[in-house]
Length: 251
Image (cartoon, rainbow, N blue to C red; front, side, top):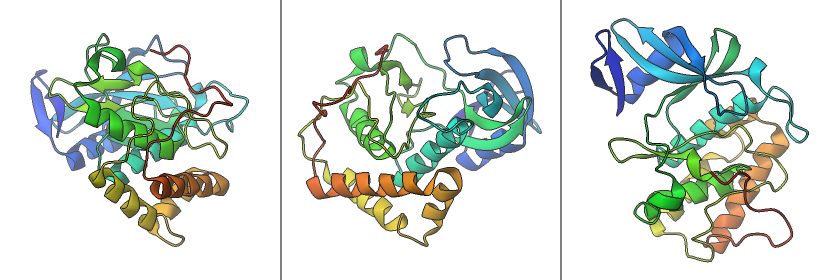
């Protein structure tokens, strides 16, 4: 369940279907640019009928070119991360849609109100189980930029994972601050979720087709290989000693 606001500014609780409808169909009003974002990201409100909520809009045209990721694909990777989160059943990535907005196509994602001082380095280990799932998610997604501040704890105590524009590369890119679980066995419930994901990513399955519309075929195949290796080992991997494993800055 997510929190929105009515026309008087009162908080409302909305279900996932309603939240996605608001994001996809709501009238968008710009409130300003997120100043600390490396790519163009705007705080907006989306309104549909009597419901409205705050959201983050990341248009394709505001993406900063990167040498190792195809130009104009970061917003698609943001949406692919939401699909992955939902497929695992872990509700890590806030509800996200692809749509045309004020500055053209991009992603629109529910804004998570959180305390920026509450991040991985001072919230772990109280939320160790949440971070185990985020760590597994990042391995499958090949997240190249898991900073401590990219995990947001909302007022209800739910941990959310944001900023996934540089995920899903075909080459190893994992950079994260979350290495506390290296070598540990993957818990049974999480292992079962990963197995179910593997089944849904078989050729011809709708979920695989959805990823192939967002990513390059070689990137989808690489994701499946990462998933298979994770399942075969049954353990959280250790950092690769031959490459950089941490993002900068870390928060």
